[in-house]
Length: 391
Image (cartoon, rainbow, N blue to C red; front, side, top):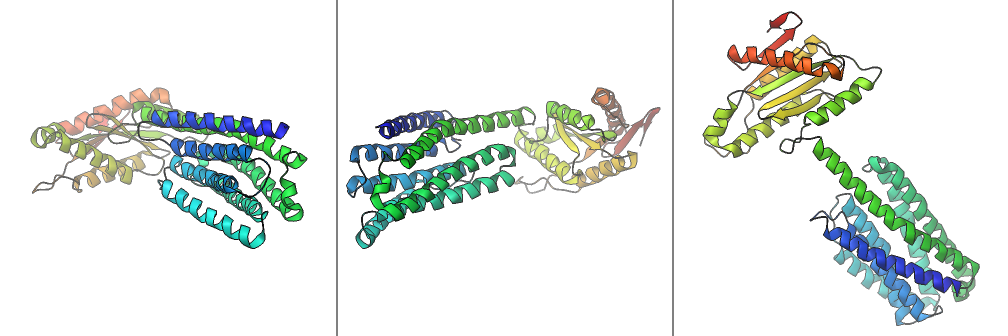
């Protein structure tokens, strides 16, 4: 009786969270993050347990066949949902239908050849193997493509490993004691379904937490980056500079202002769409020419910033000249005109600064150098030092 109540509560949890997952997926505007597939997994498992309650004691019949098929399909649905959460698009209904048909046929074969307890042993063994693979996959994800969620992946791995162990133990008990081992009143079955109920209560909020974290991380990224070029904006640059200068080993930094020459003429002649292509092209050039660890920012309009970290004046000037040359000698891609478009840039370089508080002063220095470069003919690099401006 106690186990039956636990299974009933588990069904309620699964079906309620299935509805919640589906409602959340409808509010994500196309990027469902696998929530609709998690809803399917919960629905399949909930329906499987409902059939188990209706079917009664372990035996062989249509309900048990459908129950086992739904039960084995549900964790596969969770795996497919996880793949979508990590932006690895995959089909859902085709593999689930193929698995359902294959597993149903397999149940019939083992029943006819090995007896009525064989399908139950098959389910326990299949679940143990599947959960073992899921445990390994969660651990692998935490060390590779989901490093930002390493703690969460380790928690999932531990919880899924518990399911693997319980199903492996159930398999051994079925092989040793037959269908009697599946009596819901045994101590093992109570422990099994208490653990399942625990997971049914804990895991869905964990999934919701992962989705919320992913969304808030993306919002934080959007707030710190320019939407057109995907470079840092001023807010993102200041945050990154603050992090850099908080380090005890932080060295001096130099600020480069990169201004596209005659950008208004490009917009007026070719249109704003081509102007946007030019901005994205220059942003790509800056990514390629900057050193690893340097900070790249779009100030707005046609102005960009590069902050050279842990270098000296010679290194900053070399980077500025390399950047100017790369912009001058590269065509803007994606422009379907008879003549390719090229642009040039003037670059102003500040003196060294060692704190975020000195950033505005360095900006003024680099802007003064930039102005001198523009009045001197553009497409050049200028440097400001403590007593004036020099090229």
